[in-house]
Length: 194
Image (tube, rainbow, N blue to C red; front, side, top):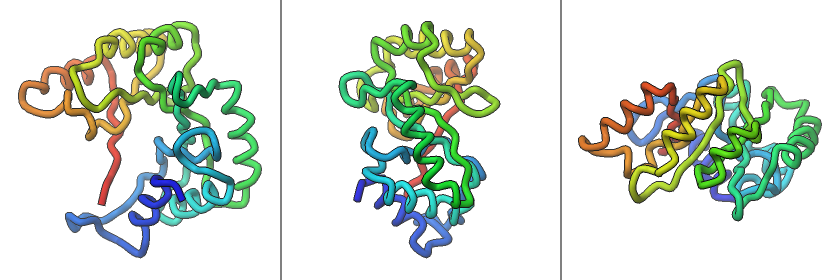
């Protein structure tokens, strides 16, 4: 069982509130889910994908964006490889009360800017979100604003994944970075933990 699936089980195992007492509820669209089996560190097989989607549907998700990693060197997925795997998943879970949409979680490295310029990113939703992630530690990524502006210039909405992980966004001296990102049109995706 993958770590992601264990976390989903813990999150939804008969709990109606988190550690802080706040009610656990999902919005109708979950925009960060590694549910395509066997392509990254998410679901290992179709049974696990089905179980993940059942948990999400039971928690209120009506649309799940399948955001497999596109991480050169580690998860070298490409749009053409993900599409048939996604289509097979959709067919296999057509009986579930959840819609699927293909997205991706793009890794911000020295290749992402060129991928954006070449149209090699996967966007989702009417907002044309492009989900991307960075290294959690260290300084502000060198290419961060270059990639953000390239996405926005091409009509995409940059969506920065799991912002709670980034040390370079925390603290009073980092407020300017967050403000610059917001001003450039970046939206933030946060992982809820219990």
